[in-house]
Image 1 (cartoon, rainbow, N blue to C red):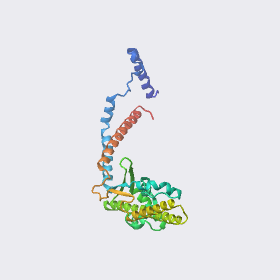
Image 2: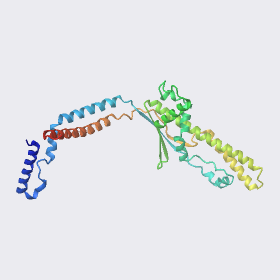
Image 3: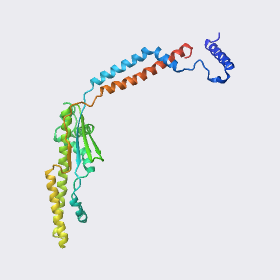
Image 4: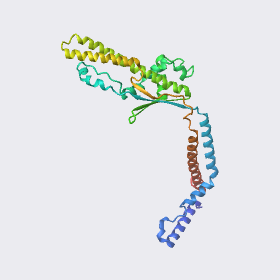
Amino acid sequence: MFNSGYIDKIKHYIERGKRLEENPGKAEYADDDEINLIDYVKVVWKRRKLIIGIVVVVVIATTIYAFLQPKIYEATAVISPVGGRTDLGAMSAVAASFGLAAPAAANVTEVVNVLKSDILKDRIVKKYNLLPVLFEKDAFNGKTEDQKSWTGIKTLQGILKVNYAAKDNTITISAQYKDPKIAADLIKYTLEELTERMSSEARRVSETNQKYLESQVDKTLDPFIRTKIYTMVAQQIETSMMAEVKENFAFKIIDPPRVPVNAIKPKKRQMVMISFVVSLFLGIFAAFGKEYFVKIKEKGFK
């Protein structure tokens, strides 16, 4: 007994040979198995129930998932670093001769680096006792103080974002959290701690420089140099006083944080639309896959 599959193949090539004789110019390209656009449409229509079923299931599942997700709110603040003081530029050379830097306001890089630093985040967490706010009551059972601190720091890293716009010379600080008031409070705490950090560091440097300069007065006999030293001491005192005031010392607040009203996540409509498109392509792919295996089975191939 001949296998029916071999007989079908023989018939196929006999028919193909006849077409070659009738249309020599179309030789190898004439094939009954060639699939055109109409064949695609026929397959999609034939397997429409499978495609619709996949789309409906995926879209419904995505919709349920989107509605179960907690709402995320974003609070933002915009600040502008204060530029350097022009009246201090003339003293930089003299200050350098004593191994000191002329007092000046913090630059953009310093402000951004402090905002992104783990030290600032750790101080925020501890000063405002944020661990009970950001975590469940039993989240730290059995953990050491260091582990608690690092967990708080990493959590704030995920919540707080810093973006510097060179064109406008502004820094945008944003916080995303499920509670809109906490999101705004985190920005407020960050700005307060940034101010405290920058001003305290400036006071420390100025006071250190001042003590050093005062110790050099009696060692210098040149009246011109003594005059310059006294001027630099006065400037260090001025910088320390400005840092003590704190407001607008290192940066100006352009747009203060406000409690957000509308959630930014989850984007339900976008999620549903994407799931519809993806599931549609998945359904079509499944339809052609099923059609292919059905034809293979009908031809007797395994």
